[in-house]
Image (cartoon, rainbow, N blue to C red; front, side, top):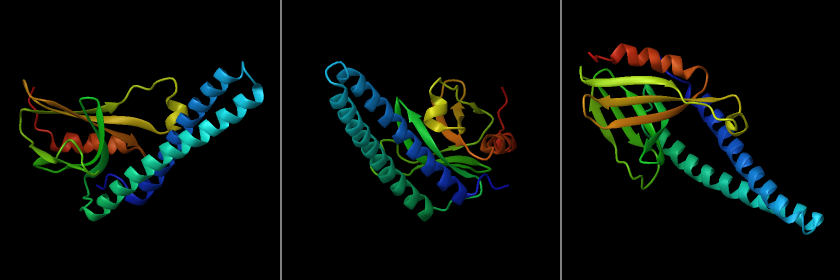
Length: 190
């Protein structure tokens, strides 16, 4: 069972990066236009358009740099049969990484340089709680990500262990395949 085709995933991930840059550029451009339209319509329009271009370019450049670094490292690593690219959420910090769902352990490896969270692994045992599901959609979600939804994998050593949450894009019904894999490897007895 292969979780996802890496080439299709890379194309969709680049589309998401472009949509996010467009989303933030439009918001900043419209806000600046609305502030300046009371002074002069033409000046507000020009400055709003320039602001849109600047923010779009900046966000696109930053996501492209981070994405290219992550994809280069992803190709260097062994992208296993049960691996997927995730955003690891830790204390409000979002970091791209690779999550491998092996038979005996779950392994996380960061894909970006100077990541605050280093690589770690968790042995699968009867006290390791594994869950997955959808991330709640917000109103502007459809403009930021299009028709692609986000899902999560939550891992916690019971009863008082640290909770790890990994968010991934549900491309080509990836969530159902991740759910099947988690059910195969889970030994949790709650």
